[in-house]
Amino acid sequence: MSTAAQKSAPMSLSRRLVRKARQLARRARQDPRLLRQDYRLAKRYAEDYRKFLRKEFRWETSWDQRRPTWWRRGFLSRSVTLYDLEHNDPRDYISDVQRYTRTKYMVHPDLQEILDNKFSFFLLMNQLGLDSDTVSLLGLYSRGAVHVFPHDDRVPLQEFLDARVEVGSRIFIKPVQGAEGRWVRAIRRTPEGYVMNGEPTEVSEIRAWIERLKRPMLFEAAVAQAPEQAALNPQSTNTIRILTMPDLSRGKEPFILTAVQRIGTAQSNHVDNWTQGGLSAEIDVETGTLSRAAQLPEDRTPVWFTHHPDSGARIKGAQVPHWKATKAMILDAAKRLSFMEYVGWDIIISPNGPVILEANINSGMNVLQVHRPLLADPRAREYFLRRGVVRARDLR
Image (cartoon, rainbow, N blue to C red; front, side, top):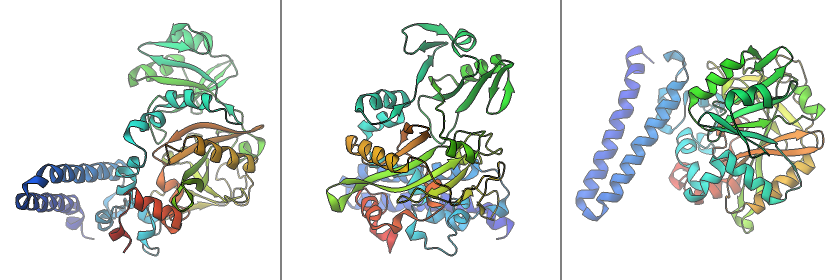
């Protein structure tokens, strides 16, 4: 594609949005009763593509790495490489537009807060009576102070960091609301001081970072990993993402559509977040064994590993411990939260078994679909169709 054509791609998309709005306006003039409905549709359509373009240009790269011809089909440039769409059928994949703008409607808006708010979800998990350990919540920061759990005292942030975080402990700081691992930090206190995401840090820097965000933050105790999980990369907490949804052909019985093992790398600062450079290996739902691992590409070349690029640990063929118990626990949780329907569960495997860390409406679609298209499963296809994430014309 020429430079002029590349630069005109966003403008072409804008013209497409304008044409769509004009079409809706003409339809509304033919039937004035549809004016309000069509206005909402046009507004949502424009907002969807604005959000899509923000995601596209969050990836800082040169124009020759972008795939603007795929934008009108709803796929980000990196997704074209991840899913190898030049050789695979794009109709089998949830597109990025569908992922960012429609999957959120699969959980009723009045119930989304339960999953979006990590503190609310923590309280809910402690009421379900699942056969699982729970993450220890150490405190909640808001407006300059930390409410300390399980106590009822409230102390200044500096005092909490100085006196309430023990030497030798490892904790996670995360926003009460957030997605894709943004603003999550792993903190470790050593006799020499603090380490944040693997880098020595002054306590004043941690305090300043939290205060600068100006949002409620949770302090969670890190859960010890099973030895097999830690071996993948001893420097990171390596979590599992499991996606559950109802099987509409079996009375909405929940099932596990797919599961992946996330693994931290030096590139991701030893946090297992996929968007920051972590790895994703598919878990065989039946056996619990891992596939080779993928990584978000920085160009048009797919990136796969059979062994960890830093630790050298074997990934492909490795076994997830306590996998049978993990599946049973997640299906039990999905049944108890059947009103949620569509949940991306984050799990850590401790030496004693699975522990639920959190749950999400945004299931990180590309970390899952990099291994195989979700719409290839008839149960998923029917569910996504029924909930309006995909439409029949999208599949033709």
